[in-house]
Image (cartoon, rainbow, N blue to C red):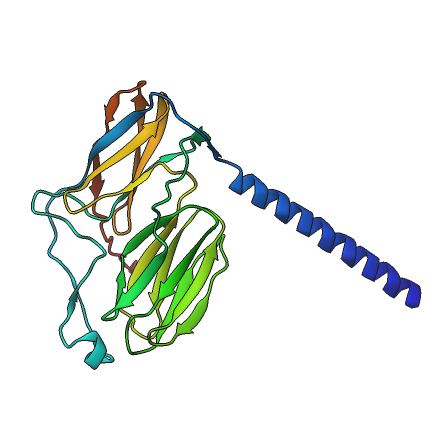
Length: 258
């Protein structure tokens, strides 16, 4: 029996060590997928993200808890913000699968705050390996819940005027909610390369310092999904890339009559 136990322990230890080696190897591959460097005579990609079709009415969120801090009025939803001419705010435009290019900028966001029971900003983009402070400027507790697959998920309370630092190692789109105040939602984009932009109210974006070549450029928005197109950038030139996103239709399921 002792020999069997010893063999079992040795096998278990060997499997654990192999799993650790594979995990560390995969982690290095993910983090080393993009090579930072200097780009000489780089070009740019500019354009606009718009909604195809009619502009929908702004949805409202019911504020029904901690109204002394959160307010008594309903809040406009930030899930889809569209101007009168169809320009889409908070769309993330990025180059996918680019292995080498410019360095990550130093001015990336370092925090997400909660003020008046609303996340600020609504969408945040950071490089892999970044540590970001999740702040609470309110007098009430918030319970932050991350919905992630690659990065370690969390579901933790943050006391009023407190903070919770978290590190995000792997590229991923992460939804963050508050379990105490159900209307609160934010998005954290861990971007694998520095070629990304977040559209403003005018729907415009610019990606600069792009090496000459042909790339797949993606536009993503939380309510509209994503679309891509191929864009060719010349040395020192400006390539145009305009996107149209379509509102997802809700298909009603019909029950079959027997």
